[in-house]
Image 1 (tube, rainbow, N blue to C red):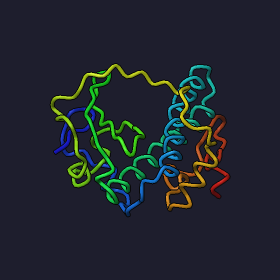
Image 2: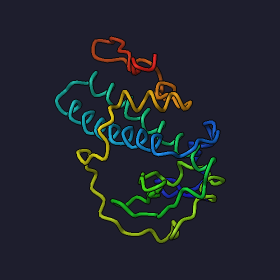
Image 3: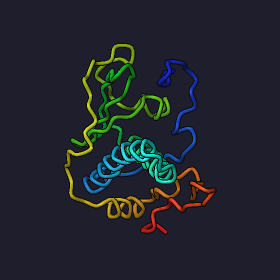
Image 4: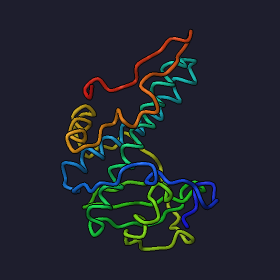
Length: 191
């Protein structure tokens, strides 16, 4: 059984809670996934910055969207593995005390927590090392490095056309901000 990020086993995996319908890993899909991943990283930084300056509403909006984008990424990767496991390779990395699975699909790389895939899908990914012996990798998240000039809106629309709607991955469509005000966090391009 794959350990969760705290090292315990039996963690409920994301793939146990979402559909795993096949999805063909073409370059258009992977570029959109790359954009979603980069924006999620940027939103994590922006949520922290907003929180630090006391803007709780903005911090909550950024955080909710970040979480939804990471769940979107997980669904897409799960569906790619279900569709074409031969297109995917993996390598376990030790990063800042946590173990991550670096998944490579047709030259595009994405870090995922090992528990994000259900064991049935993880078993389909050819992995070059063991989760017990991850490669020590100095990983520095750099949201500024770009491999695409595609906008988030264009990426989200392309994923939605393939059956993966980021708005479906929001914990809820609104967040409660300062003064108990509700703020819609859905992406308007998907409504």
